[in-house]
Length: 312
Length: 289
Image (tube, rainbow over all chains, first blue to last red; front, side):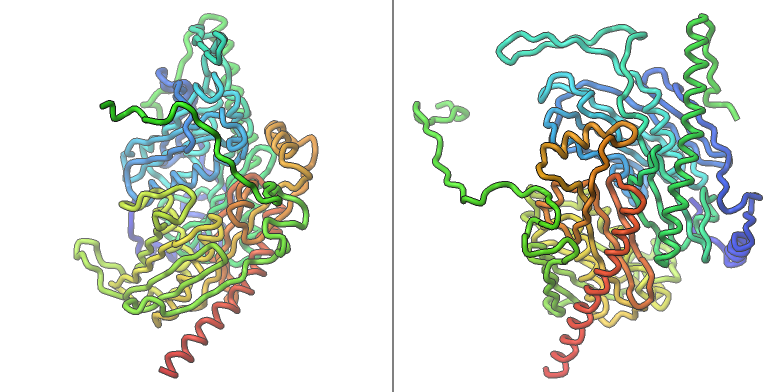
């Protein structure tokens, strides 16, 4: 991440935003083109890669493993210290919003870990948000599916958090969990078997409720979405708004060392909410399209072509 | 001898425990809080005093009943490492630490855990807009928070923000305004918790079949936080009318958020008065001494 910006460049960006035209020709509420692809890593239960035109590139994988439910969730990350910690904690906050966990002791916990990114950043996440955790339970109190969500930042070009959460949502949509069969041996003893059928799998229940986030950057008296790295350097304060499909707010966090006036704050929350909702709708549409076309191809026995890692 | 085996008696008897009559667990009910004397919009009484740490440039101690924390401000001092690069602005270095015994579960005190790291970051982000860092190039201000007793995660952070800005003022560091922190929790209220839990689990799909009634409780304690659907922490500069930090988690509809933001700002104004009082008291004391 470039750490410094010259006063002239800052002035140029500030004035541009004031006039509602940004350095790359976008207007204030415009997103850059997002390239989203699911099912990119075959070894995972679900994966997605999000690229925001011009830089940010995030690979998110979901791996379902069997483990015993532990009392606490773990979030860990590796990479640049501060940012990594910030992203991890933010994700855990946004995704961990259903309070069903504390009432069902049998529910699963999930963990996240991350690898270091090509640039200075790495984020990781853990998810319980919206997901119906009780469905991940195999034997109450003993065995459950643990969803490991790993986000690997391959390239940085601004607006990382939005890309990571978009990728996480897509990866969860792509996730297939094998079915299990539980046998009651009596005496409170259970035995289970994982069915080895690639076609007959479960989806992650409650995945529609997964939130995404919209990062609003306050520059001057205005706010912009999807900031480029240079615009991020001019940002006085940013507000991350996490929202789910039904338009409920799942998390808010202010970042950077600046303040926001209350009236602008409320306006930004409202704006982020509507923005996030439209974004989710479009994302869902695309994810569904891709899943449908993949399914149709599979039924016809055609090979599924993925863009792969070298596609531009 | 087998050391791993517990040499207990062959016969064991369950201990007799006498519960007090009103041992019934508190559940969220309308207009009634865990502490029945408090109204939903009431904060806990605040005790705030400056100058408890004699060696620090500035310090403050804050107590909201069972939330107790101390804050020490050291500096401004020059940046120690030359390799850290030149900074035209001063740097706020916040260090948030829970005492090992502060929470229900014992915390390991050797290193900052991720939560403490994040709280440190939030704290510095909340304070930075108020402090005139542009006047302190190449220097660092250290802000150390030690939580002695934590009763409610949100209130702990809010209290830390309040105490830290008072300590900064006490240290004589130039600021634009004091930052007051306030927390609020919102939860579904109903006659019993069993019905609310089934509601939350069934409402994980799209759209709630029953529209739950949401109540906002200001400055929630641990017991109330157990039932919360979400919480909000707001840092606000009352004179400048500027929000310096906002943190929210948990699902909520837009109007609830707006309402809690407004409630928090009102409460911040009350906290601001307490902060003022504490600083004036410290001035008087230093005059007398």
